[in-house]
Length: 424
Image (cartoon, helix red, strand yellow):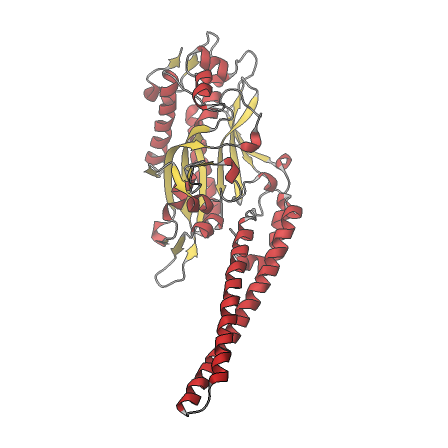
């Protein structure tokens, strides 16, 4: 969320940020209304202060007259009228401030200057690792997974619906193996503290990280519409310190958590529905970092490197893509996508998005730090990234390591977790 001062004092920069996202035409009415509401708010505050000063002066005069035995009935009526007018203005002010809050929630973050302007056609590959396998003769992962009895797609659909997966036998062990590998790597080698978090969060937590109100239709809400199944562990982990003030010595803070994730993805109906490419429930290990504002760029590179390390251990060829402003997530100021190549479907598959959010999420969730004793608290910068999301990683593993006899080689880093060197 932006501070209203940005609308007031940096309107040109805000409009340029929305223009770079390709969203200015849509958001110009929102920005213009916020400017008008801010003027109205400040004028109302000034009027309230003037009327309170007049009431105070009148009250003092009432006291003087009563003490002197003079008639004060007219002034008493005036103070009552002023009180009623003040109450009405304060009620109006409350409504104006609520409208400002709602408008600020509707405006995405401003991307950093290093982010290319434009839509996804302006995304840039900044580096790559490994050599993608040729697609000749490679079967798609759903055929391999079903032949090896790793996946049971029909029964997943039967018990839960389209987009829900049952993993069986070695497939289930593979899911558990990925979780253990990733958590062990991030805690033992990358210095993250491991958390085990709830998969149900409240509306405030979803609002804090930017899922609400913008993307409510994509979320799985509980019947009271106040609790939600998490779309990512980013939500509970980022909000862990909501409303708190951290010591500077606690920064940078690095947290990691495994969780199942739930997304309706209402806008993606009919797209990539085969196999594991787009599902409504999936497993993921998430990385979250808090840092000082001046460290945001360096922390993004560090976090992205931690996600890349998983792919390197798995031996999966990948590329790092800097997203253009128009393809950058609503709350993000800069995002790298990690994409692995799946030869069976002939596609690069996104398995991670690593983002810095500047103070956008921290302002919503009110996460601050005090740089030194006695100094005014300021908002932290938040970052997060998938490291990694399991389904597409599994799809890439089944296709990249597929053998002519139908078996699949298990990468060395996973063998002790899976308990086998191949799936057959």
